[in-house]
Image (tube, rainbow, N blue to C red; front, side, top):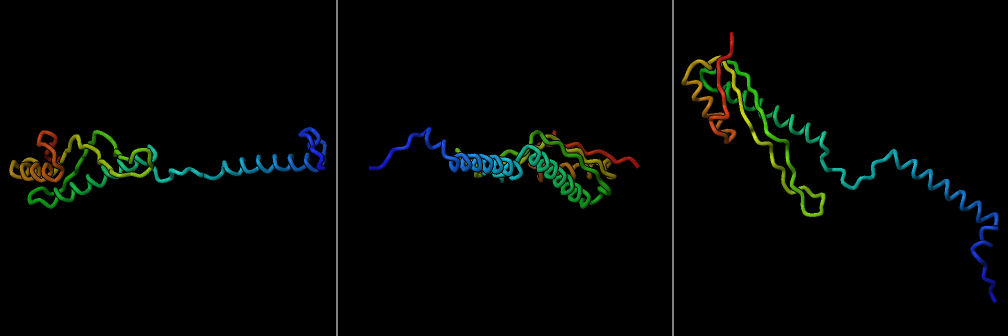
Length: 149
């Protein structure tokens, strides 16, 4: 017949005590090492800092594109563009998932175009028309004025 050993008797054995102590140190070591690695399963989710960078990048790209477009209009000459936006990039995710399904670009609040030909009503109308159609915004959100010499 086999003898049954109690739980207290198991801890009396030196081998078991050493094993438990070593296992404890290994566990603590693994916890310590894990602090140096990022095991986050949602690595591809944009953090707020990344979102801010995305908004700045979006704004800079749009300003550059508008500036290049406006400067190519006859009579405009040199131009500067300021674009203001209302919100940041919004992401739409699937229900209970980290999978991004849609990215909503920021809403444009207003555009200021300062150009050399900004005192000519024909040039102003051309710039106004081009900017409003390119950005799909109303004329009340666009200001075109003359660049100082």
